[in-house]
Image (tube, rainbow, N blue to C red; front, side, top):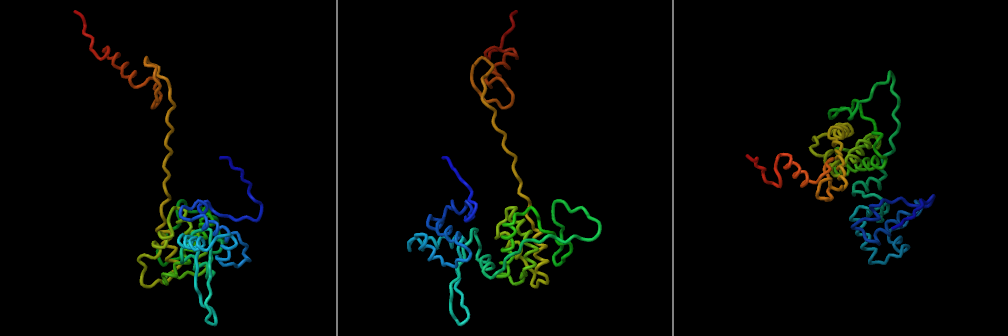
Length: 286
């Protein structure tokens, strides 16, 4: 299969291959999601109107909407506004969002990009190697800086997870500044293979009855319980190429190291060198 692809210079939508090849999303669901994501920010259009524009019929739309909601790409809420009127708010995303993360975005809680740290006074010192400084719960000394190697999307996702904590655990209410400072550590968890569920459980399990400083406790748990960097297995050595046996059998064999004869020829040569012929011991003549 030959492929000729030219990256567009403008008017395009960034989507991951996970959406295009999603095993549980039907073709109408993928088309509906991509169509909605491609609309400009100025267009406030409900999902059912998008389905009409995309040529998706009612039955296919119902199924597509259900699939997108089940996979976390679509969220919907019924909200009561001033005057007692009920409205429907909808959200689509190009990444999977948990309900708590979607609500945080809906309410305007979005982690800002980490700002550059202010230079400290005095002589420069050598930064710690390998891990962040360890703090005890309840203390805020030596807060770790944002890890520069964590991709921005993971930092943003980590901030959303932190923002969603207060929806279920009121003792861990974090303000916008706290989320901005801790989002990089949460992103480091995701970079090391942790899931959103792993992160939430690590931050909320076994909380004390009263939390005096949610930010300090969250920082401590993020650093103290940080998963190990996943180990990478060494690549398996490629097998040796086939070669012709240098013995008398004229076979082709695959050597293990640098041997030039096959196993049978090596065994025959070893037998002959030990004084045997054809497996029979030669008796000396008297």
